[in-house]
Picture 1: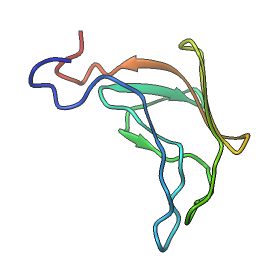
Picture 2: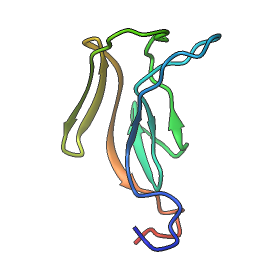
Picture 3: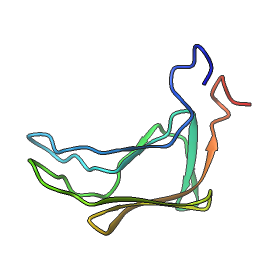
Length: 98
């Protein structure tokens, strides 16, 4: 990471509990300084919601991230796939891209 770089180059899996109202899925993906391909399309947005249900209150939830190199990355919640993507890559729009 560069001295003045705002965020590290990474793929972040966000583990979120439910807010008091509304829907708030868990196992979402944020991609600082990176992009991914999902369903054959390059996605350049910073955060992507999974299709997980909202979990409220105190409860145990089983979470897993399966990474097969740069080929396929899958997120599971309670053994159900809630997100799948591939080809993580540096974002050429970022000032620290090389």
